[in-house]
Amino acid sequence: MRVLIVEDNAFNAFCLTRLLEAACQHVQVTVAHNSYVALKQFEKYQPELIVLDGDLGAGEGRYCNGPALADVLWRKYPNAAVVAWTDCKHMRMQFAEIFHQHNKHFNEYSSWNKIMCPKRLHQSLAHLAAEFDFRYYTRPSSSIHMARFYA
Image (cartoon, rainbow, N blue to C red; front, side, top):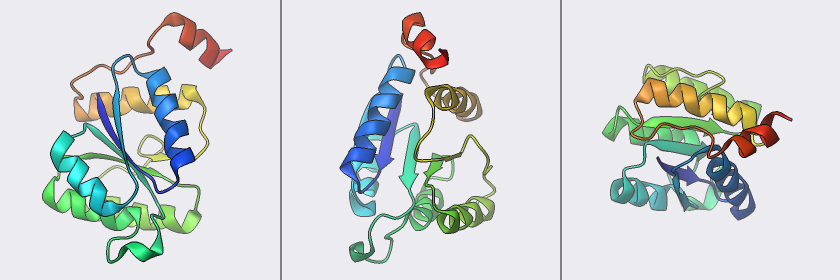
């Protein structure tokens, strides 16, 4: 499964990358630090899943936040699987509005907190894989990993 993480904080991107690698048997993660790079990476890699940070920095220009980038992506690629990744209540409301405008589900599977347990990540990925028909079945890479997740 190809995943694009759009996150301006390198540490947050690293942590989510490691969590995804632990939760998925076959995952290729690409990280973009702003919306311009994200659009280029999306066109180049055609990821099955896009995880968008809410606040991508004010100095970037017109499309400097996750909800605006989700809007741009869905206008060009209406079937893209997008997850909002933020703890900010205001940003969640903006994401919810954009999801609603594009007739997308905004729920616990498409809206993640910055800190999430591996069990919840796995449940979300399984739900999203079924909803968007990802090419790779998302499952734990081994029973040892799952034992650590649920312990």
